[in-house]
Image (cartoon, rainbow, N blue to C red):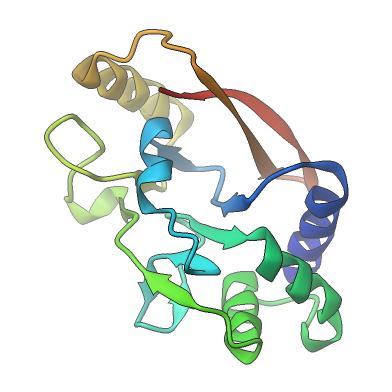
Length: 173
């Protein structure tokens, strides 16, 4: 997986204009308008640290472009197999990255809340496509989010089968 992530990161750096890259699993529901709430330019990597040590890619984490570039330049420090979240967090620490630990979300089986208007949850991991569609409708209904489009956001995804591409259509008010 780290080999795929590295190629994806290089592709994103060479093909997209962005300040933050959001690394998240494809079976994670993301409340699109909330991803901006945790961004802080004073940090290089922001997300949920498992055991206060490793970024949790399932619920998602952000990597600032400046750190992503440095990590890609240090690719010889990475193994091309194994746990990518562990390896990239370890490399970020070696590069003295400023890392911020925030609660991004929860695992769906943990009995914690899904994103809705009454909480600040951003993501829920291990969600089937059917549950994801239901969760999205309920979330959007709960916050009164109906096609308000003022700022378009490009979100890049790493998909099953080693493909990656550009997903468009998230909007920020």
